[in-house]
Length: 71
Image (cartoon, rainbow, N blue to C red; front, side):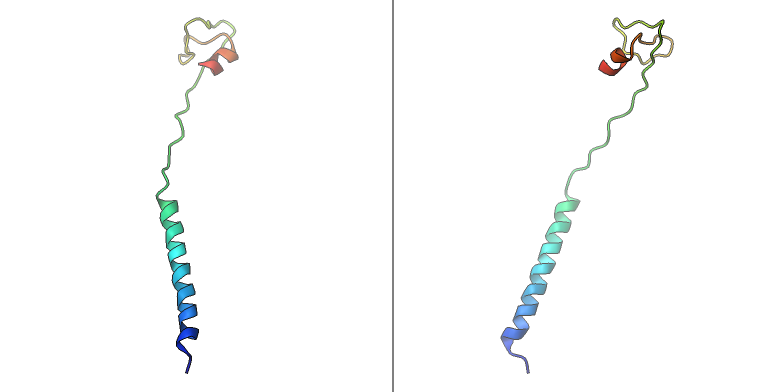
């Protein structure tokens, strides 16, 4: 017959392992998930205009790629 001590040690290890795994699972499941920002199409043409333009309309493109990146 096993002693109380030899039975208690594996039970304690199993209990601590279970509590640890449960803690990790709860921590991972409680983290907030944020959505990626919505992509926006920017239009650029050599005949475009950079002044006061957000580059989102194909009939009113920006003149430079840098302006499209900056807005």
